[in-house]
Length: 429
Image (cartoon, rainbow, N blue to C red):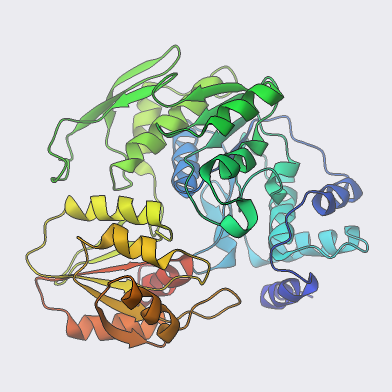
């Protein structure tokens, strides 16, 4: 096959289960391919929320320092090619197809999952890209995720919350244990949240990883300012690591107070790589100013303004609510929401109860998707006022545009499957 769309359609049907966690199939295929771990540093990023931001921040700072960086992320917003980037540029269809041909020939009788094909393709593409560093985002969990077939020089776990409980466990201790599966003996393990499950420290000790946690081994001081007010562009913040202090950092270009913790976590990881990938204070500042990541509290100014955010679980919804409070609005806040069936709709409604005045439901399609009627029922049961049910995201956006007043605002959130089509409809991707 030479068509990327045909390859992807075939991959979705090859394995009997969309999600089948384990490392044996990937390790077998890598061995058959003769893949060798590169000599340059590898950073692996796991966690419930904030993974994409940490990948983007790490890559932006390293690129500002002149390094050539490969990034692997998932899922994508609109194009599959977004998942694999070299120096910020999406990989081509032709490169992906060539990688898929090699993987298919090497897998033997193993029926790889869609995500396993994706991970293996990234590793093959990066082989010949002349990189200085590789940053890999874990898809789900950590211990049994395909990305964990690669030993990282630095492992980041951003934060732990309840999500994907069917596969990872019913409490934060179990989930933390799974995500800490990316830690390696004698290598740095960075935890980027003040609230750390004890299982993180237990697993780090068990494998002999060098654990560094936010609030103990590195910390930050945000700019002064009221929590209900956005920071000015000239605001500055500080960061302290084990042996380094940055006292005049610009705001990260990514919007939201949680980005200080994400940036601090990234700086802690980069501090451990200082001998191999040194970065100056000026390069850190340049990377913070330049970082880009679609769909993370992305604001489109207008009358009314639109906000796009991939928040898809209660913890992320609490962060979204906090960020909404920093931007006052004269009118109503209308939420276009589309989520997957395994998400906690009630928890999401609770988090946003004081921040959303009306809900517009967008139906999604796919194996784990919720129809408009199904989601409307769940939201209403949790106390949400559902204004309209739309068959799909584009229809929801079109209806909201006509329904909203100039002084209202429209927030689109709930899934990559929701935000991607909305950004495309808005002409932003």
